[in-house]
Length: 116
Length: 159
Length: 103
Image 1 (tube, rainbow over the protein chains, first blue to last red):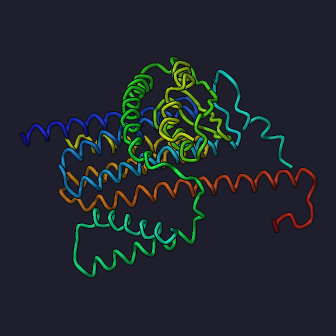
Image 2 (cartoon, each protein chain N blue to C red):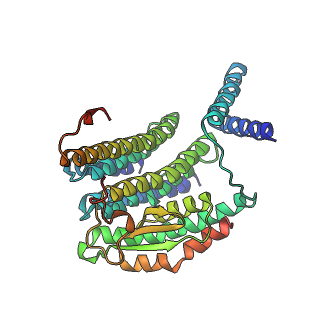
Image 3 (tube, rainbow over the protein chains, first blue to last red):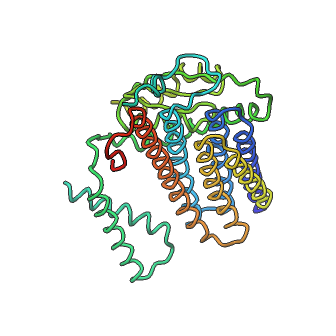
């Protein structure tokens, strides 16, 4: 029984770390800044969920599990907020997404001309 | 009423403190209560509380939303994983604007963060209740515009 | 199993560092540093279990918060300095006005 739990926990942690590794590769490989954020967000979404979830299974019901849940909650709230702040700052600074189809966002139009 | 809210905040903080501490001796507990009171006082001094009120049903609807979001995350993670390891010519970055149905600050934050949290879509601008999202491929952009996530967020926190 | 995951995360941190060095814009670097920070949190959580010292989790908790605040602070700094650059460029276009350094 104990061995099965260990195995499940290990599998969860390893599969999570695979997502994290793929995200790292994505952040290095992607062609422009906005697509790189997508690569990095791969490491911020399912990676932590699987890794910390696996560790929770490993720890069993205890105070440690509560702490892991708190770490997970903080990561899930802060990492998209940080990504949004980053993307929005880049957009407002006039960094244009490459090769984009569809409407241009209003925020970055005429950024250079509006300086007083 | 106001004092009651502050007292509730202190109690909630102390509960969290108890869960994280694991060391229950009288002087430590006193320090804990003191630090909780300090934090509540500092926060009260620092932040102007927002005027939004949410119904209590929010607290049991959110876990269900999280479950659904984890499901979405699994799907989109696998898609983006394939895209990251596959050829880069498969990318077709698209920018879409979507309109949120629920307009409270909480609902907008939840929607924006959910969009960012599912890989392949990324909130880059929020203006009023219009969100601009950068999508890795045109199909993910179409999925986002179809509005399943927007509807669910609006169901979690209706105006 | 935990060690495999730890090594994978270490490799990811190395990749993030490579992105931070490669650049090209300052936002790419901030993105890489943010990634590095969140991976540090995960690494700490894993090492807490690998070494059997679960009090490391408190550090992970604190690091998660500090990392977030740190990234926001760096972004604010970048934005602020860019605004200053823009203002300086705008004023120098009109010729050197008096007291432009005191703003």
